[in-house]
Image (cartoon, rainbow, N blue to C red; front, side):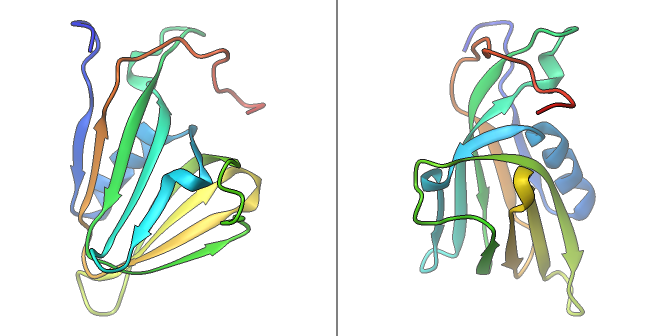
Length: 146
């Protein structure tokens, strides 16, 4: 990474932590094929191109390749996301956590533009976000029309 580009390395273990990750990932884009649930390892991983809101100045900005991983995943449900369309691009709008009756379990909901969402049932919140590339200038900056 360039010396001025500080890569994010964040962990989330509660709803407040997850809100920070959600803000960092707002307007991230990914291909459906880059979202993988490994039931045996109990992980859900998503590779995405994250807009670096923390580095945005005015209308300029940067994107960076990032990896998001959920641990202790008990199950995943998707709605209005075509899993067979591996090349289809989705835009992440937000993530939220709904605790279950038995703490620390709950459901993380990933909300995508266009009405799609993914519900990730977890035994506890164990989420990691890491930037894995150098940043680059995007062809356009996310905004109200995106």
